[in-house]
Each structure stands twice: as structure tokens, then as C-alpha cells.
Image (cartoon, rainbow, N blue to C red):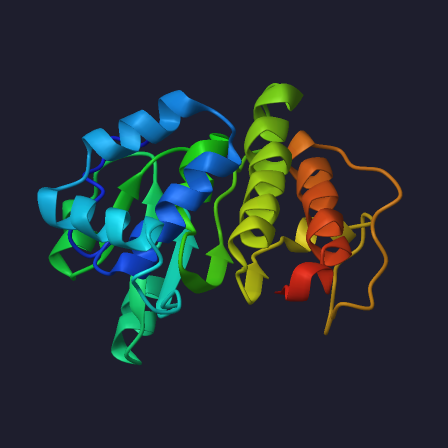
Length: 219
């Protein structure tokens, strides 16, 4: 279930991050996940975990941003240029992002464990992942757009993330008319003609409903 990723280096670069990763795994209530995490730690990171377990480290450092997405390079570059440290959760290896100095975590947004681990120790999460298209099985759209978003929200709450920025779609307010100068006050559509629009609307509602929970601000 864990992403195919070495959980050392920058991801667990401090005892605080080590503790956060361990805490996230234990939140799942599955000892197998904990064992898998320890197997992936370098000896240095393992020492940090043990120190964290004995209360020897300081407060958890929240200096990271996580981008949950597929095609993210433009957003990532802008975040890096303003001085942010960036971690990206994506389904496949991305050498281009790694070349930029980004911490790339391989995993799927529909995998709760992967999302939980990818959002450890971060201040903000940009959720821009989605299954896009006009045709296809509703279940496939629901898996990524709704279940995936629920995992992101839950992970933010469990990890104490301060802010979740969600990318929605104008299709959630389409009522068979063109939209001019639209804003957030537009009502949701009464009927949706594609599973993409329907599932994006459901996901947006979930994100907005989570605003204020456990100190999380959603946008």
C-alpha cells in the first residue's frame, strides 16, 4: 500500500518529519504499514524516529507544501520560485519534477495510505488531481474525484494541515448556458450530463463542508 518511495532524505529530513510519518502510519491501525515504513528508513532516519519516540526532538516542522496531482509542473515551478519546499504525489515517476528538486512521492489519490503519508508535515495542500473526460464509467470518475478528494480532506485533518486549495471546474455550475463573469455565487447545476461534472460537484461540496474543521481552511 505504501508508495514505492524511500522514506528518507528530505521526506524524513528531521526527527519531526520522522515522527509525523510514523504517526500517520499508526493512524491506519495496521502494523504491516508500520513495519513497511521502518524497512524503508535509512539508518540516519531510523535514529530520528527512535529519538522522536523517546521525546527527544522539538516541534514538528511544517515547512512543506504538497501538490496532489498529475500534470503539475507549472504550479510547482511557481511555488519553487517563491521559495516553497514542494512535495508532489503522482502515480508515476517524474524525472522532470525530481530535476527541479521536488520530493516526488509515487502513489494514487485513491490510496488512503499514500495520501496520508504524502501530506505529513506540510502547511498547505494543493489538490489538482482529477479524472477528466465526458465519457466513461461513473465508478471510475467517482474513485478519483470523490473518493480521492475524501482521502485528501481526511489526510489534511489527520495531519493538521492548515490550508487545502482545491481545483474545481466551471462545469459544476453549467446549466446549459454560457457563463460570463461567473464567480462562486453561481448555483450548482440542477442536472449533470457527464460523470465528470457530477463527481467534481460532489467533491467541491465536500471540500467546502470541511472548512473550519480542526483548524483547516479550504478554498
